[in-house]
Length: 390
Image (cartoon, rainbow, N blue to C red; front, side, top):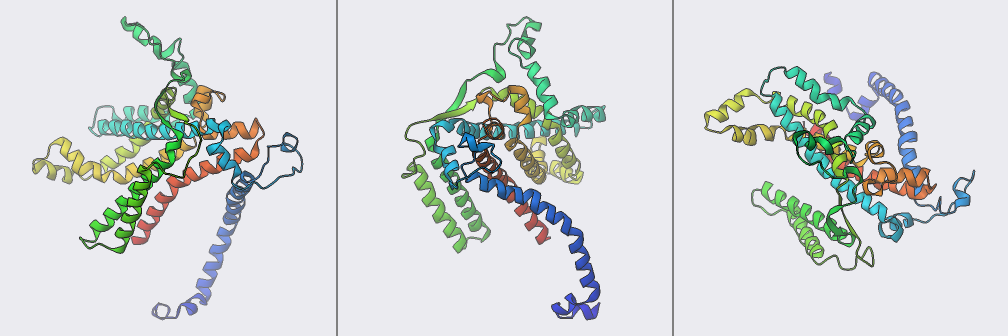
């Protein structure tokens, strides 16, 4: 061991035992690497290439054995974000944004509330834990079917008030076309640039704070870029005009029913995560805080909740990943042709396999891939950094 520890790196590599271990490890991993390269990254590359062609624009070439395709570059992406006829895709992005936001917040809040309830050592805890966790074991198709029956405008939950002598509800749940919080699509660039500028300013402040008052180059650069970006966003992003006319989008109230079903199913998952985290908080920390005069609310706020931060982050990543790819729940509850409750994954299916517009379907798939990557990649990066530091 002493000889190997002091040996030159290339001599260690030439050591027969270590070289055999490396070769064995490489051969064991080779089939998985090949399959991953072909069936994941190969298909992703093929999808990106198809999204830059005109496959499907000509109906005679769409299903041809050897279609004659033309390279159009980013034309399909430009069409999705700026074309008059693709307003449905832009509303789908807005639907996804609101669905993801409320789905994550609702699922985390309900899961945390259930976990805090069970953490009180209530009677029949195992029974309640099983009941709360059971919806997570169901498929979204089953959940969607049951909740669609419950949310029928002429029955279901709308007639519940009649049981206590109150007038029945008239809300149309998944069939309503009402929108709230409307905004103009042309303001999206300003919003995105403003959000990026806010992130840069936050990073600059963190770099300044961690340097004990010394202004490093990094914080100055981030602060300058953030200030420029924020000023540009406040001016309305001059020079960037997506559409020559206002195009209103907003939150469709039809998603309320779908959100109820999704939160009901996934809250058991977050409940299990939070319950494990609460049981992992040392009781000595809670007792020490109570001894110092902290109320029960302050114990949770200053002791328990900070320790649940990693669990919350992990749950947000998983839930965000699910919400961005949601398909089956909406298909079952609202149908494929209800534009009010449409999402990009559903539109991708319709464009690709109903309209045979494979290039546009591939472009929507790539946009979805980028949205998922924006959620997953930063989390994986931070996780790998943490493992390297340990």
